[in-house]
Image 1 (cartoon, rainbow, N blue to C red):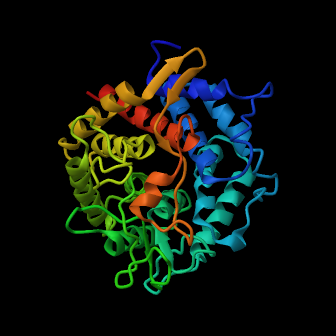
Image 2 (tube, one colour):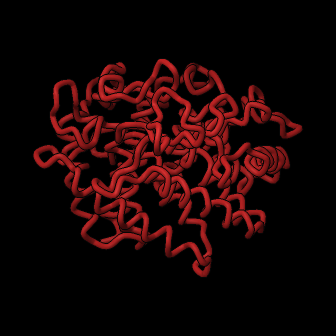
Image 3 (cartoon, one colour):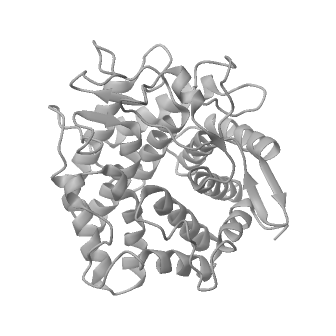
Length: 370
């Protein structure tokens, strides 16, 4: 394993955790956004390094859920949950490689959810039906790249307008002009305990939330027609965000903090899932020429700091530390500084490892493009 790129070494670590039939118990547990992201990271690594076993691993786990009639085991459209879209991003690669209508049918099912998704007054997707009138940055990553790829794959150009609307709207509703950062969520109704009574915004800048949005921008842009009238606007938002990320990068480590603008206030810490997402978005943005070259050293410094400080290798493989296990917004998750630093900090959670694989892959591709 030693001598292989970090993406391959980390994927191999995940594959070794599978049982005798090649099934990973955590990834196989349910249709959800984290397993979906992990499978995408594994398949992309296989694509870049020509490792068929990686793609087979992704297919094996997708086929546990996508039934022969195209239905998805465990998926319920009536929940209108944007998180449930993310795993569907793997359907496009499967459809391209296998002439099996189940993958196309499943894609249509997920697209139908987005087309009928409940919305705010100005057309923003609710994050979930149980979170009415709320937009979270997380949801843009779950839904926008899927819908953009669906629009390109199935020749539905009007859906690019929808993707652009969602990306631009959430930025307008959550961006703070002073810091250049975006708040985690926005409640149109201004009724949630975490919502500012005037703006409806949550009170802090959580690194992983902004990481989801940064990845949503670059992954959606990849599928946009070059002549789409909003493409330049989306690139402009991405450029503006990249400058904010450079500003708030922690100088000594090159990484980003759990609560981005709070420095080393008591309890704050360097967080690796959000940092990996920023590295991925910046590196991919430079590689695809959406971002100018000044973003490159920002990504390189961050990646070097990540490897040096928080990646460990032992007999069982590659391990990633300092991952926020989970955070959200609800009655008992009030979006305060104290809340974000109170969530459990863990090692090897897939919500951190999957972005690390993607970040590693993009850094490797960027270096290879010299």
